[in-house]
Length: 99
Image (cartoon, rainbow, N blue to C red; front, side, top):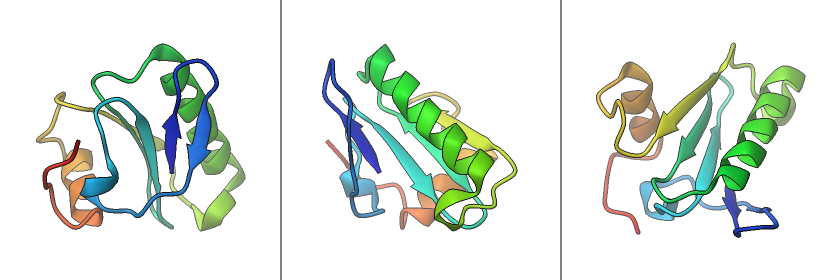
């Protein structure tokens, strides 16, 4: 899922591949075991807040088949070598170029 816009956040379903990411938006990657929130470097505070709210709801309600024990928050360019970051990129099919 991708959240876009500057004032009114919109949520869109996108393909779960690295090419769907961009530095100006936030993304949720939901699997049965993981709930990842990834924020692009240029995503604004409104987008980040709405995406965090959605991730917390999905994780707490076990929506979309997600049984993750917590939301793992990732920010573009920060802690890129963490265990969670590596798992995130693996689930997306590998770290490749994006917009």
